[in-house]
Length: 549
Image (cartoon, rainbow, N blue to C red; front, side, top):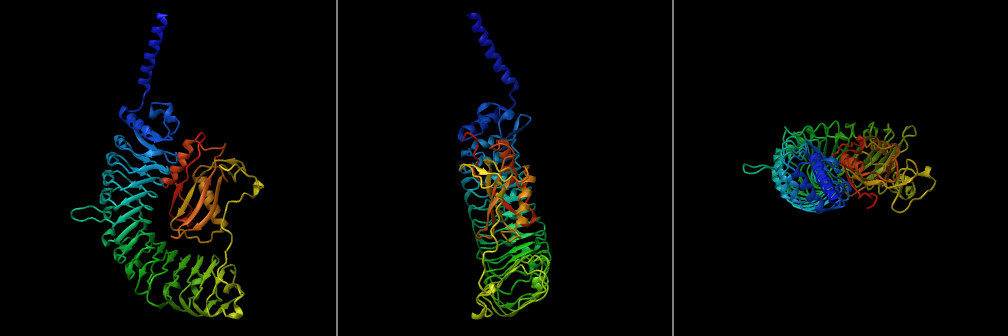
């Protein structure tokens, strides 16, 4: 009996020794991760089955025994991000996106992660201020905090992030002015390498500082829409020649549109709608790459259609609703090779609408409701007769023509796209499962909503374009062909295209955690790129139904 006791003691000591030999994780990092595990609910099962994070914990990647990445997107985590996170001093990537159960504030200790390059906390329920200590993360290149409840001011210390190329603070409750540098403080104008500047859908106020923009910036996208910004559009915007998308709509901007904007010859999309802009109608004649323009709901001086209505052949979408344009609508506008829709309702266009000439083959909609058009010229020889014409509310639509299709107002043009399940023969699934279009089997898809910030398409029934979106998703995300289901596309009040997306596992009922993490990360860090027609996007995932949860 004594021999057996000594044997058990020897085996126990040996097992402790063996564990010590094969334990990979730095003791300090292991203690931090254990503390995080204790403060979170719904951590991955692998976190419960091993005490050595670097060898087996899902979402933990290590280099030389130190934790280099903590990526737990869409894991269903519940709890707070505690100050212990600052102890992971070799961390290069932190992604906790799409965990709706994560609440509370970001701890100041986030600033201790001096080697952090990627910080993604999008689509959670974090709140409070954005700590100024984030400005200490001088290696940071990608910062995405969108779709939370952050409040307070944008910290000027972000101006220290000289390596940053992606800044996304959209869809929060941030307030105050946009910070720019002074002799005694930092500001966002110091971010010379930022290409994507997303501050939309907040409560920012004050003017857009002229100092914010300069010729040595590398900006591609500026999104300041959906705030409470006042004052004039700064002429310095015209210095940023790399700019492709500029959205300032949905603010309270006043004054004239600066002529310097015409220098933005690389611009693809311009949206200045729903402001209080005045003065001459903007001259955009040099924007030879402009596809989409919306100048609706402003107070420009009454004028005839500008010359660029007849010369910017790159246009796909022209929107000037509730404006003060008058005279004839230029017939050349409808002949542009890529023109898709012309929306000019509630202006004062008059005379004859000339549609007798060449009509662009992609044209889908001409909406001139509530103008003063008195006559219409058509030609039976037009190759494209599939566009929708709306002239309701014009003198042309007298009592005798009131029943003609173009006088009855806009009707629903086609049914919004939804991935077909016709091949599945009406098969149904339990309430918490969905039918996969790939194999007509029931499964638990990874779901979420994609919001496209600057789409060029407007036809929600365009099968070709939505098929291209489906294909891009399954190809880039490494899924089986046909394993993507899209439904309920619509344009929200900010003119963003929102689409419900369901991605199905290749085999079985569920994605495993590594697969969900991989897919979520590709959305969160913008590795996935949609077709060009859909433009910039963000994705917010729904909680995933893992087995046993």
